[in-house]
Image (cartoon, rainbow, N blue to C red; front, side, top):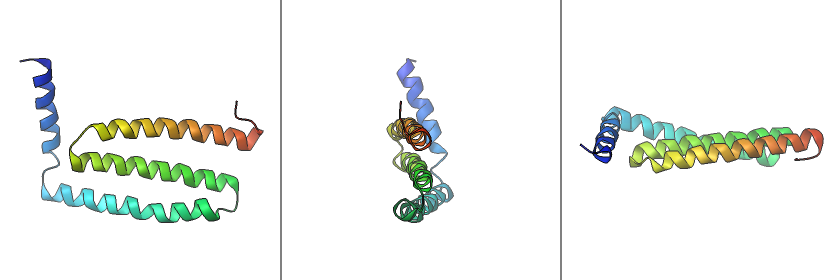
Length: 109
C-alpha cells in the first residue's frame, strides 16, 4: 500500500464521523448561529464608541469567519478550507497585534 492510498483511506474514515443525520443537522445549526452572530459584531465595528471596541469586534468577526470556514470544510468534506482557516487566523493575529500596538504606542513597527 502506498502512502497516498493510506492517506486517502484515513481521510475517508475521518469524514464518516459526520455522515449521520444528527451531525449534519448540528453542523447546519452551528453555521446558522455563527452567521447570525456576524450581525451584532458588524454593528459594534460601525458604532463602537472607542477604537479598542472596534478592534475587538473585528477580531471577533475574524474568529467567527474561521469557525464558518471550518464548518464549511465539514459540510463540503474537503481539507482545503481548513488550510484557509489557519492562514486567516495567522493574518488576523498579526493584524490584531499591529493595530493594538498602533493604538497603544502610536506606531506599528
